[in-house]
Amino acid sequence: MPHRKVLWIGGPPGAGKTTVARLLARRHGLRWYNADAHTWEHRDRAIAAGHPQAIRWEALSREERWSAPEAELLAMSLHHERGRMILDDLHALPAAPLIIAEGTPITPSVVGAGGRAVWLLPSAEVQRTRLTERDLPPGPLTLYRSLVGEIGAQVAEYGARKLVVDGHDSVTETAGAVEKLFAEALAAGPVAVTARERGGLLRYANRATVRQYEAFFARPWSHGDTRTTVLPFACECGRPDCEADVELSVADFPPPPDDALSPPLLAPGHRLSPASSAGPA
Image (cartoon, rainbow, N blue to C red; front, side):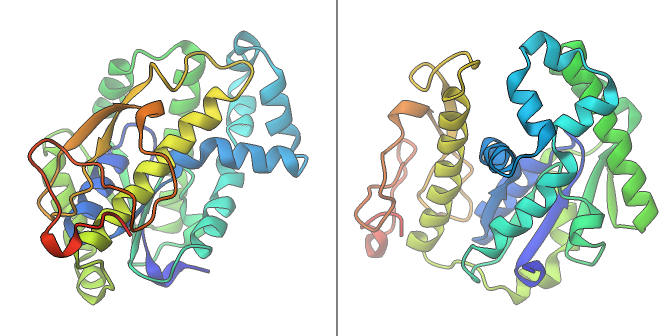
């Protein structure tokens, strides 16, 4: 079990988990594990294991898939199954530095309710506003609302630590509140120190996003492609205060291998320190 090397951020869609985790990872030199980036990898794993709901979801048309009853939508989302897959993923990662893992499938029943975990729970008003802003079709909207109730109920059942997102604080302020909750663990480390180490962690997170979209577009029913899909990738300069992104199509992201000879992805005007000019580790 990887609990001792992981900081956990759970919560329903739209709670701000990804933004907070990404900011803290860059600020403190942590490995950021984004559960969303492993969605299709987990689905392929479930299909290979013969999971009936994963197989059914792939076989249905988009209209059939999203018109299913709420209970079936939740089952086909693999919300409960993916928690264990996340544990397996994290167990396979290096012991250092600390990992900050975030995602909807991270629940108290999977990771416990200890001091290294927090759940961001939007207030009813924030939930309504953020889901409306996403302009979701009825099916996904039903699933997201179901996840809000499911996660909130489990956090209450386990007495897990929660942070209510009521819309009054900025993202930076919410990240600061989470940072205070994790202060002891962050001080104990270990964390990445050099720009090269930190840049390598950012390449890891960027690569996970690339693989997410490659796996999605490989599906026969998907629409779009890696050439026309443009995303904000994290600048890999490794500076603790850097929050810059680089807009790039998925297809144009630097190819593997992600080793010391691979040039870092840098925002305009950014560079690695001279001692780290070889690029991401």
